[in-house]
Length: 174
Image (cartoon, rainbow, N blue to C red):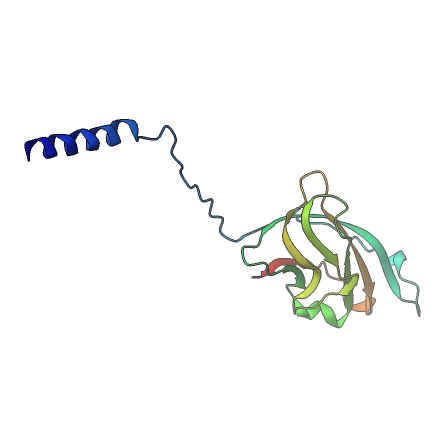
């Protein structure tokens, strides 16, 4: 019995000493929560309309006013797409001014950067200006540039007032 126990002890020791591995594995998981970041290059712009801009009986239209650039980063964890909407903060302006925005799809960046909705007339209801944004980022050098078109429908209502209207950009989805 003693020899049996001694033999078993030797087998266990040999297994422990020589059966050890020189390598091990470790599983690393990177967990990224859903991310949506949005930045606009210009937070304000001024459109100064002088009296000479109005010709009686004609529309007062101001086209292709540079709005700036939208930069964004999106990480979609479930494969669903996002969109960026724009809306006006004050619906009372809609009675005498029509404001449209046109966003150009980013020309560079990485990933699924989405598609422009073309020219969109703004209201106090958010409207999609960029859609089908997946996981991607525009980078700092580029982005989605945009312009405004403004049509003054009732110049007499604007004659004696200065207006400040906020355009609200919202990253939505997922």
